[in-house]
Image (tube, rainbow, N blue to C red; front, side, top):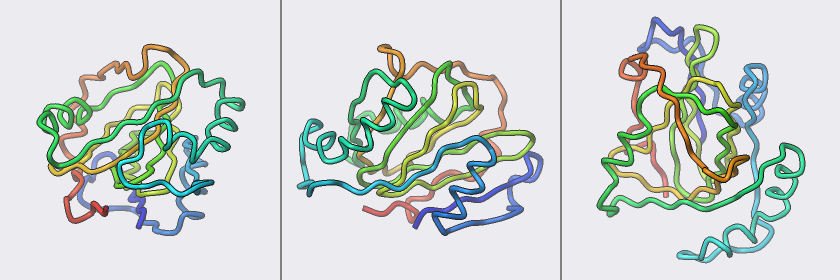
Length: 186
């Protein structure tokens, strides 16, 4: 189940509010300028499907977002607990950073935790299968996939370079809860 916890940036252990319903999460994040949607596949996806098959299953929603927002490229990323670089990849995303373009992720399978630092608040969102998050360029955030990652995600980019981060140097991400393996669902 998707979950949104909201914290004061100075109180990392006491949520101000918690939401579990997709409509509530979308409303709250929308007020903060963050896109949150639910997508359904237009055709079944078999385990181990190729990136092209995954993209084809969500082609209508992908095309809609590309037309609305001007995204130029789409790809699929997949990570499992057996991946030999999982710890290095996890560490890459754990520090607060921004991007010059939007960061858009749709979770085809598995889960991941996006944490957003906006106007002295921290929005901690556990994304699950079927969730799309769109983080506008310039938004401070970090991402955790847990020590035992499992997800398949569609990524949309404006730039052909893909994921390029500008790290803020702020240590805030170290103070907030990490994704717990028990929060991960396959």
